Image 1 (tube, rainbow, N blue to C red):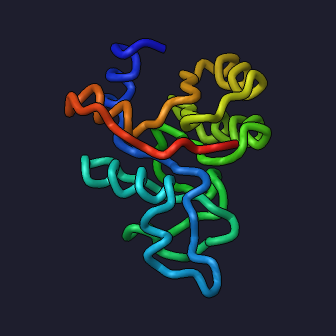
Image 2 (image 1 turned 135 degrees about the horizontal axis):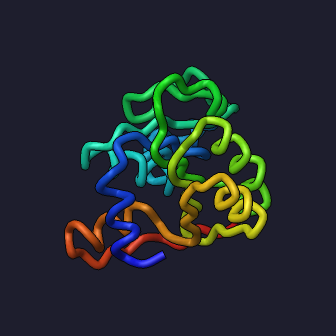
Amino acid sequence: MNNNEIKTILENSKTIAMVGVSSEKKGEDPKNLKRKPANVVMKYMQDFGYKVIPVNPFAKGEVINGETVVESLDKISEKIDIVDIFRPSKETPAIAKEAVKIGTKVLWLQYGIQNEEAKKIAEDANIQYVSNLCIKQEYQKLFQKANPVFPVLKN
């Protein structure tokens, strides 16, 4: 996937379902939540005009960055342009199948995440597949001409 293709995706997308946004753990300092990679990326994309719907079955009904968390992609009523995944690579094929069912245009696996089976599922359904890239970093690079620094996300 080249820069022009990614730029086109970001220009033509309005709504992102972000799978794996973190909820607050019992006894955890709420400030920690703001620093979690998925939450940082969610807030950033919201600041640049995207609607970001957090998806996390363990946080259903919580409000993160002003949006109510849904338990799964099929619980989202509006059209999703990008399904952005912050989950281990091995979980991505199941999420890819859900993404196909809801008719998303793009399956985006965050930095450090890639999976050949998920790629095949997406491509067989004519969904663009992006992997091992951070959507926030790509936005910064392509639209703000910034060279972003972001902690590495491990699988």
